[in-house]
Length: 68
Image (cartoon, rainbow, N blue to C red):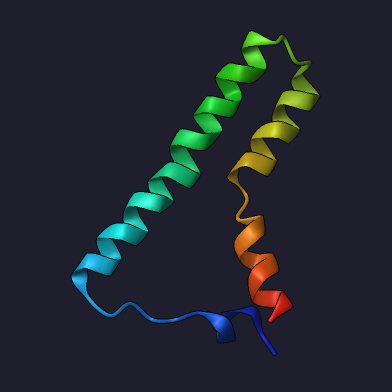
C-alpha cells in the first residue's frame, strides 16, 4: 500500500487555507527558528545543516500514515 492511500482530500476552501497555513509554518517558520537557534548556540555547520533538514521534513505525518 502506498503512503498516499491514507490521505484525505480537502472538503472546502477553508480546509485549503488551513493546509496552506500549516505548510508555511512547517516549511518556512520552523526551519527559520531552528536556523537562528542553531546560530545562537553556535552549532557547527554540519550539525546546523542536519538540524535544518530534520526541521523541514514531515516525519510525523509520514510515520502516522505508514503506521495505519
